[in-house]
Amino acid sequence: MKTMPFQIIRNDITKMKVDAIVNAACPTLLGGGGVDGAIHQAAGPELLAECRTLHGCQTGEAKITKGYLLPCKWVIHTVEPVWHGGSHGERELLASCYRKSLALAVEYRLESIAFPLISSGAYGYPKEEALEMAVDTIRAFLKDHNLDVYLVIFQKSDYQLSKGLVEDISAFLKEAWKGKGDPHAREEEHLDSVAGELESLYIEDPYLADSIPPYPYEESRHLKKPGIQGRIKRVEWQIKQLYHSRDPFTNFCVDSKREEQFFSELEESFSHMVLRKIDEKGMTDPECYKKANLDRKPFSKIRSHEDYQPSRATALALGIALELPLSELQELLGKAGDTLSHARKGDLIVEYFVKKGIYDIYQINQVLFDFEEPLI
Ligand code: AR6
Image (cartoon, rainbow, N blue to C red; front, side, top):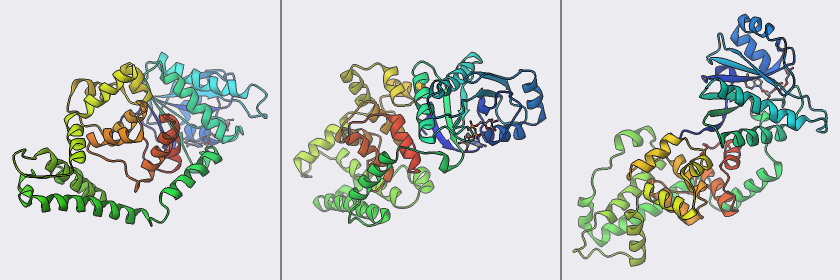
């Protein structure tokens, strides 16, 4: 699993097992409706009792209390602006709510914090802008701090992206799938094509089958994820093994260009390719893993293990952070034992951004969330 410093998730914030959740409170801090009401209800009356001792809070500021009956340790109460059309300092005040809450988390040495979409309910802040402000402010903060930040979306209708962008991506998906039937049919097609490739290798050398070691994922990954994806993975893995175990003295003959490509791909490990690309781009390690929305820890494994096998999400995120063109992104993913597939909506969304030269994980993840695809 990729550990992401910033995640957008669908949940009820009162269920979040984090160090602190943020409450979109009113100036008295004495409770209200919406998320405020839900938090007070779940935390119990002791929260209200502690809030009384705080004597309110100014708009754009934040104060902290314990979490009482909530699964989190702390509640950070921030008072957000009411939307009056946008010319009354609403943007600066909303940004301040996020910044002050995050600063409190740092002051209390917290490791994780969850925000609701502040101001976007009863206080009327336009949802699309409220989301943009949340993401931009959190992203800027995470450049200089290490903290796990969750943006918790309660209902899908709270989450609004630019209509133009969503329409453009929907059109891109439609175009990519034109005449290709439903996603399942496309996966079948992909499986047929890799199975055909495997078969042609066997025809060239019938003894090759003996040289493939047993498929190692059968027990773990394959069983948990049965179905077509697992079958595709298995065949792709077998093909790789065949190229890998080729005996140079046999007459095993394949298309020389493909063979060359396969061998050069196999020679360089995932870690090596990532580190080489970091050097080529003149990036520092933190610049790369921050841009990839990746924690330092998994990244340090790439530095220390030549044969580190990342998750699919980590591989994709690093490819995006390194601003790889589509062919190289595909190559990098191949080193992680995976592939970019037109059968997967999420992959096509990544492709959309790469083709446009937009290497922005935060923006890509906002769209993936909207299309209910796993984040990277
Ligand atoms: N978990 C996560 N998000 C939630 C939850 C929940 N349990 N419940 C609601 N939301 P709002 P505001 C979302 O109205 O606009 C209160 O009365 C909700 O869907 O709670 O900042 C306070 O006392 C929306 O997306 O807060 C203040 O007076 C977002 O949280 C005033 O309302 C914020 O909606 C604050 O208004």
